[in-house]
Length: 248
Image 1 (cartoon, rainbow, N blue to C red):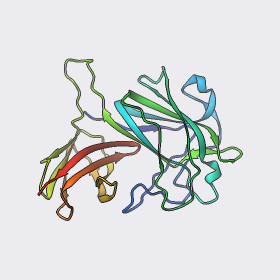
Image 2 (image 1 turned 90 degrees about the vertical axis):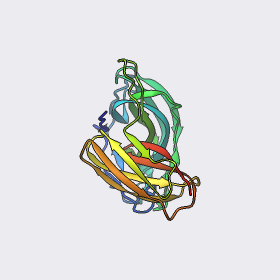
Image 3 (image 1 turned 60 degrees about the vertical axis):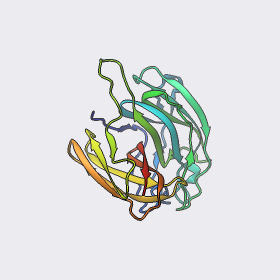
Image 4 (image 1 turned 135 degrees about the vertical axis):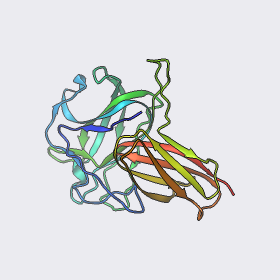
């Protein structure tokens, strides 16, 4: 099933970040941030006029953990969000409050790897709003560098056929040195991927261009030791993951 991840950010400027061998690290360039300097009406009416960003995943997803990065630019960390609140919705009309969260100020360091955010605990949602309630001292602007969601496409019983999370498959798994990642019916675009060990160390990463109904991505892990690994595929704010088992 095709899906599209889109950002509705009427008051935020969005740009992307790249980080070579350490995909979780953020640059100290302020341009690698999302910033709101004018409060506008929040899609969740109870939040009134505020600084917010809304994510529309295009389909209903089962959401788990989040990772958040604050503004990390030199001399701009005072614009970073201090307290925020997260709301989610199935239809974009009725909203449920997930949690309030207090973020640490960005360190303006190229070693910055973000922080763990609120966990959705497996709730289903298509829309998520993050509203910044306070910042680290700037007179008008609020912002973040990046937000990532751990998610799998939700099952539904609207029809007799259940929609499974089969857009990303691994075969063989377990495997010896070589395995294949298959991406099926995914929105065209440039996806980044990484493989991490149990300690969270990135052992492989790269990008894959999706422009067809099925894309094959071979993985060569001949230089790695036997054990469990996690393959993560990222497109914008959405992250899909699969467990890998390397056996010799």
